[in-house]
Length: 574
Ligand SMILES: [Zn+2]
Image (cartoon, rainbow, N blue to C red; front, side):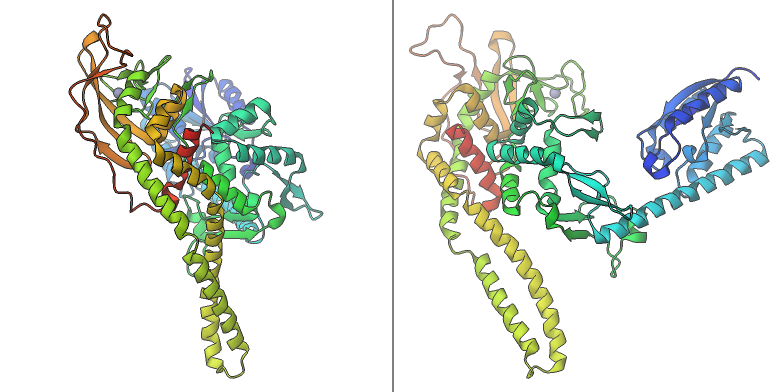
């Protein structure tokens, strides 16, 4: 037989689920192939969890290589490595591709010639068995998991602060990890004291404590990342409630089999486990509120701030502009030809920071009018909330619950009424539960009122004056809170270049605005003398009357409160 190249498929297929086989053992397949007189070429699929072939990119590439003649055959340790499709369709596809390419097929045990009926039948039968096997393994795993979820918290990956302990019957349970206590304490302190999650990560990465080692997508890590902090803030286990299912994106056939309730709806699992709580719910809600609308400010690795990155969009292609040297920004397609989001840009824009800031300064009165409108409304809300309708409704329902309870035990109540009252009480109880949570939220929000009132005072007084007196970096931070999706038009070349604001999103009220009346601006001529301070940019013509006082009445308190507070913090330099 001539020397041919055989593609060797390596899969680790979630070792925990399958158990014995290790990927190293599969690399022995290379030796086996060499032993059979061929050259192995590895296709490493480890870490791919896709169960059907179309989602297995490496396997698809291998099949393409087979078709184009790069390899002349395929090898897999066994059929379980080859296919994981419970319906056996993948096996058929792979067999057909091998036959079409006149290729070979090898397993650890033997070589198959799929053009022979006997071998083809063996192949199909083995794929079928592999499918059944996968189904069994998966079902055993999941039926156990769902049974456990009915009783107690269970994590695929134990969150920070917790560990699995084994009881005397060799069963695992989630418990607090005392070795993580100091980390949890440091987190709470940082959440209290920092203004953004970015600041929290910088502080923890600089001053410690280190994040306990975890296995992420990029391998093992001890670094803190914003993404991980968001996960912690969103996970109710830290306040003593375990939830599973509510946010599960893909509910596969496994759910249909094991986790449907009596009405045929996918089950959500929830347990109250106060013994696992680290923080109280009110505190966590306050943190969530503080961090849930992050500013777009980005820091470069060297600590140099590029506050406008994330705010600017390339006027040509709409891609996000990124920092491009000191004081400059450029379309992320510059250099690469393709932006970070994959789009192609024929004229990647580049712009200087001082130009952007000066153009936005012209638009500022309009945007600050939004802020002032909100500040006005916030003041109204502050007084309105003195008598909360939610709290009143709650008191009413609690009273009614008591009277219903009384009537159940009242002998004068006819027996056939008792069931109906009980049903009503259940509904009542559900609403009470919901209102209680709302009332806690409202009280929590009230804690922010003092800060908010101060913010309103600043915004209603003389925000432009205050802003102009602030150092450039802090001004840029305020701009990044007010503006998003900023696009700037450019015309002319060299010294004759001109700029004007084309469109932007007013972040406070989340409204996209084309700017029709913006004036063109250019740099002052280097040889011309100017009276007083030399202008940064010179604008054509006279400013048009500003369209101030946008209608903000439709906005709800909760929707704009975080932005307003963040803006207040930026203004007051906190
Ligand atoms: Zn572009």
